[in-house]
Length: 271
Length: 269
Image (cartoon, rainbow over all chains, first blue to last red; front, top):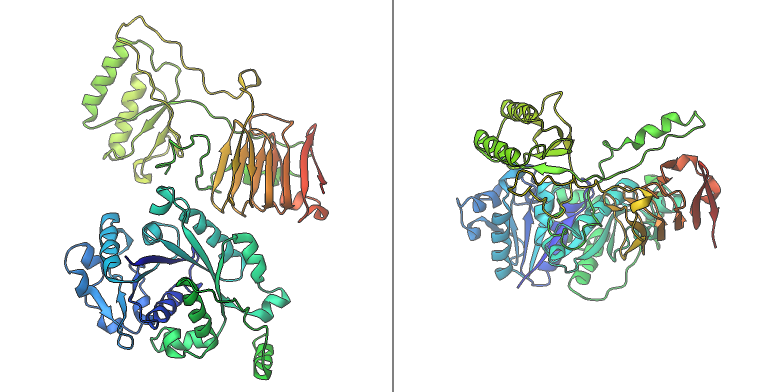
């Protein structure tokens, strides 16, 4: 049976979709069967980041409403043959997701895939609660700033109360993925430090993704950053995070602690 | 909203904090006056009526009940539960009028869609907690039962203080409401979370949210925390906002108590 992961945050724009795609591609490169599922009905983005926007014929709402079979709606990645996408509908809204329909889809996906990664929409409403409902494990994406941290805290509270696991009295495994981290700005006090965020949220750290232009570049060419440029700093951080998800012990490095000459110059310029 | 949790612990409810609805935001405006305003929480037991369709038949059955026990609804707070009831504004208006005609005074409506409401209707109530089913009057018309005592929090009826311990952080948006006694949190209370306790509150972690101790009129309640970064503190209705607190207390282990109407604070080691 596959493992269901929800990538969630509460706040929008912190990097849920980027992280879903990057972690999905990183896990698929370990030859594990991965499907990334977009729950953001009405505002779908994952297809763009995966570079599959022109290949979406059927989406999740079609499957829920019985217009298509699940295998018809699964889009295989052109670069990695173990990576699949289940797109969200762009023309509907989140009310088209039914709890029964989502349960059926997740149950079916669990039979065929090792990892089911659900990209949650922002907010705490229906879309977000349905995305987390069947998860075995949660990746909470947070930026090092106060509003994102507070929203993540809210989401963690919901993960502990509104998910099936929580209702069955089990403990939901939660991991913090700190994205858009800039060590220089954290040092200057413009951003929260890693330890501050961990202190407030008190959940284990899955990884720290450095703020980088490579992420934007990758989205623009329609590739998860772990596929577009596997040697870039964010890609390496996502690879490490994926290894930790898979249960390996990988020491966590705070990005930007050791910087070369170029890094120093750019670091100053970015300020 | 409370699915699954009722049978676990009725007293510990975690529900979203609705910042808009709390009267607390007004507090800052009266700070210029030396006297503070006391705002307290009270819980009362209300009868909840859940009508079903068709409404005229339901009203007939209600009349039948009223005939068996005259004055059953007299002077009782009644909440109208219209959850899952497929009616529109006009029907709701008629229903309320029908109830008023029968001397049933509605203090609030539960589960209504905003579109069903018009000005002048009783206010929306949210976050009700179920209690044991209300006993209907027996068939003998004379068996007038004494009205159930509202769950009052007066000192005379207060049972021996109880306490609850919460072993995990209280997250933003959660609220722990425990009018029966002390609350201990082994963990932090996040910004945007709140603890409302009838007794004292002990936080073994950082306190970043709101804490209201002694909420049922207990001036001897205290607040203790490992690290004070609270948004709002209250003991027995006396409030203090973050900006009213001495900066030297920030981030420190602190205890707070009341002396008269003044909130006192000192660091503890």
